[in-house]
Length: 221
Ligand SMILES: [Zn+2]
Image (cartoon, rainbow, N blue to C red; front, side, top):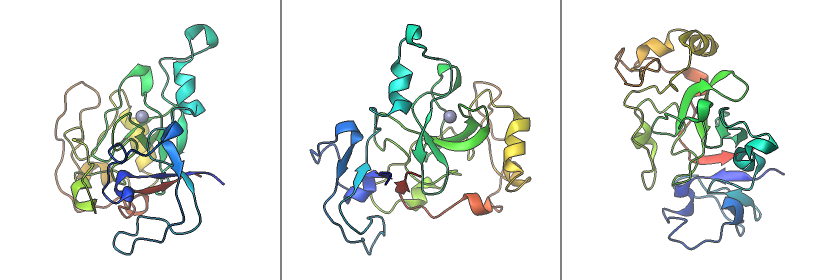
């Protein structure tokens, strides 16, 4: 069975760092747990191995530190390490060209991944909350979805965050699978330049099926 990924709020608002938990490779096994009636975040069932921190022992992370002579590709997007329960992929640290990912409050963004395909995806981070703070796209609403301690990031300064260098054509092709007018309903960072601007306003259109409830609970596929 594949291990899951748990958010920091799943530890009952206890920081996993302050809690002193031993997390080799960023994960550990829980004792049997009942579901939390208040948040619904804690899975019930038998002991389960799951990750909290970024599992830097996995190939998606170790491959990034391979030397150039051993075939490393420092300019490519990080590899997939798993999927959030909303279906979007979670990738290791690095974005294309070795850049830092420009992410929204949830920790995700639109942009090309290692296959070249432009999709919405999350990035692991070496700091709390390590993976995603909420289920994105954040649309500036991450704060509203937190049931415990707020782990939302500062975001890119717009409702929709797109990694600089992403082509608008590829982005619109991806979004048209869901809703071809959705992008125009939100502010977007200027992903063609290094500064950000607001291109639109309004919040009335939802992204329908790609958005899910804001449980900070994730699984591997
Ligand atoms: Zn990315």
